[in-house]
Length: 63
Image (cartoon, rainbow, N blue to C red; front, side, top):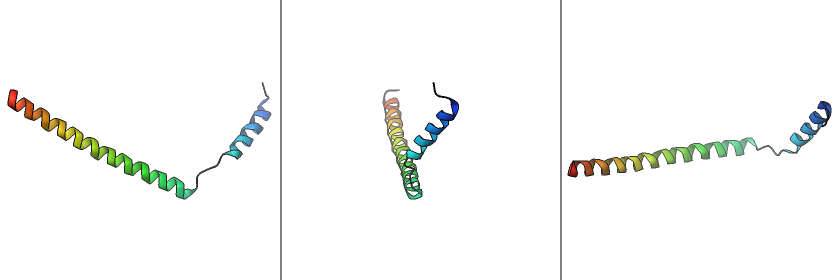
């Protein structure tokens, strides 16, 4: 087991190897996440609406 000083040195060396995203990449991916979340919400809203209408129709006809 390495001593704490060695551990910190190795950790710092590994963090230095990380390729951090640019500000533009972060903004682009964030916008894409919000856009896809909104599209998914709209899609599931309409799926829920169609199922609800179908159930109401079935219950009206046979209920």
